[in-house]
Length: 341
Image (cartoon, rainbow, N blue to C red; front, side, top):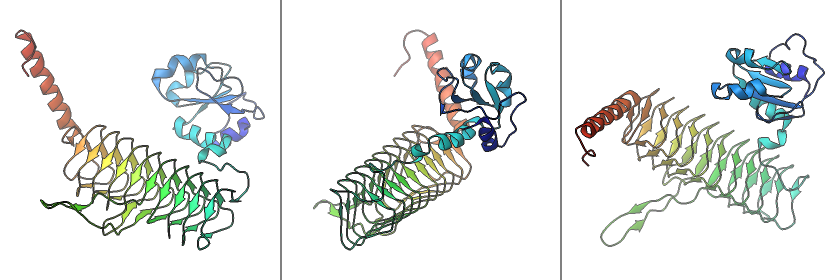
């Protein structure tokens, strides 16, 4: 990309003296960037690295602009990381979603597509993939090696199904990314328990994944028991997350690795769950709420809340509890010996 193109994509003018025809061919961290690289900086922790960077161009917020060395073009933007992500997508467009093993569309040798499946033009099916009867796959979608698409599953256009992923009882939208090992649509954990044994409750719902969702490797999403499990538009889910039957997740939520969401729970739009959060069943987390990592949610959370702890509670209350406990422990220690258990 030329400096002129970078400035245009960032929506800002080039600073005086910058050569609009100069080019960058890659991107790198501040400390290892060379004269052909783009870099960014928006955290004071990396101030020293900024002052010594050799990057040709660096995206910075206004507060750090004076620390950019003379040999580097400083592009001052409001959100350096977001602009960097946009430019990185142009420099490395192939990294935006998992690709195929092959350069051309079509069914690869070694893949099996049932005669009753329907594939639009431009679908790529890698070796070892299996597509069942009645399945429908939209144009531009890539089915990775060893993936299994079950009977009557629908996958939209320009989606990516990673190696070894399995999809059953599912309706998947457009531009969805499912990373390797994702499991979609298997039975939820439903049993009518009793002294004579635990009777399996047939799971008859689906999983509906709306447009622009991304789900990380080895995450599992169970089909609904009687109604559908739903993942809302634009939601991003990390690796190793468990989503149980009948869960409804709203639009543009962020769910970090290690989270477990129990059955029939609802997350409204724009909810963020930190790593290893546990959510019990049948609760509602209100729109825009944020739950701190390693917390346990056992009741409804009002919209716009910031909660943490076990059981989760408003962060100010949680911090006061932690502070009080720390002071009590210090007083006990001051009186002599270790604090009592």
